[in-house]
Each structure stands twice: as structure tokens, then as C-alpha cells.
Length: 77
Image 1 (tube, rainbow, N blue to C red):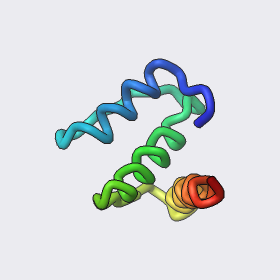
Image 2 (image 1 turned 120 degrees about the horizontal axis):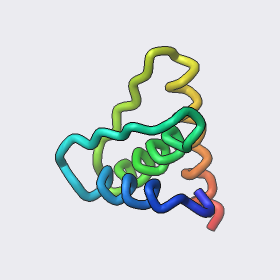
Image 3 (image 1 turned 90 degrees about the vertical axis):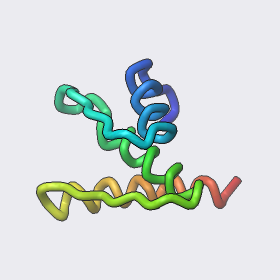
């Protein structure tokens, strides 16, 4: 996530720092999957647990690919 929108920064902060549920109402193509991929990656890095569920395997695998890309980028640095 190179240049996140302000709402993405707020959502990411709430997803990672709060233990409560977070509800996002976003339009299609607004970057929800990217926010969840980053939040899942950060949660895993902090020793937490992230469960990725979606209505189809295709959607879940797409988010998992993004999480893996963040992991690879982190290993390269």
C-alpha cells in the first residue's frame, strides 16, 4: 500500500489496534481487500491470528496472495 487514502489509514489503525469488531461500508473497488491484506499481515507479524473468509475461494486466495506479497517484500528489505 504505497499511498493509502485517509479512510484506509484510519481503517487499518482500527483493525490492528482495536480488539473490537470493525465495520466498513465501502464502495466497490475502493481498496477494502488491500486494507484487509495489510491488516492480516501486520496481525500475523505481531504474533496474532488472522482468519480470511469470503464468499468464494477466489476472493480469499486473492487476499492471501497480497498477504504473501507483503511478506516477500519484507524479507527483501
